[in-house]
Length: 227
Image 1 (tube, rainbow, N blue to C red):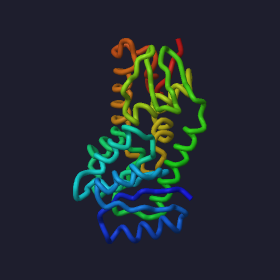
Image 2 (image 1 turned 120 degrees about the vertical axis):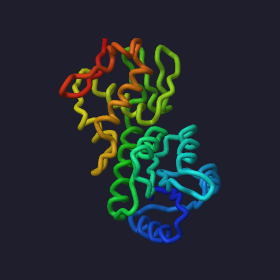
Image 3 (image 1 turned 180 degrees about the vertical axis):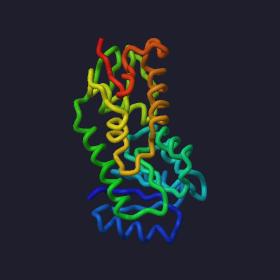
């Protein structure tokens, strides 16, 4: 049974979600504030965290940032705020998916299972990826360039891993978005992906204006070169 932490302050939603998720095989713990969520996370290990965005004493963003300082626990944002800026921010600070209210419980369960599958797949990977002076230590969630740690967001990290796992292969934009954000409603469009590519190049390339590791194949997608 997977252990799930639900951080939500809407009483009308909590009981229904707890009941439905329990029926789908999850052991559900409920926190209603940022402070309470922090206490649970300090004392327990969870397989996944579902975060409401607006909470009485802060934001789900605050919790996600705190989680990402020490853990790779999958995080899904659950909120009524569907503005693109919030979606991008949630993914950028380490969220794994984003679903807006109102929603169907079967869709939420499907999203949860998809994120858990990706998480389990990552744990089964080889412990390290290395090329072009870039090393990804998968078990530690660290990225180094020529021995120096790089600070990557969760989205940048996942993107880099996908590219390095498929060297010399052209990955289309659709393939990248589907494999990194495995959901029926893709919240990451071409423009957002282009931003992630640009930010990643700034951190890994010797000359980001003339990339040699991560190149764009016009009209097709992106390729990771090994020199």
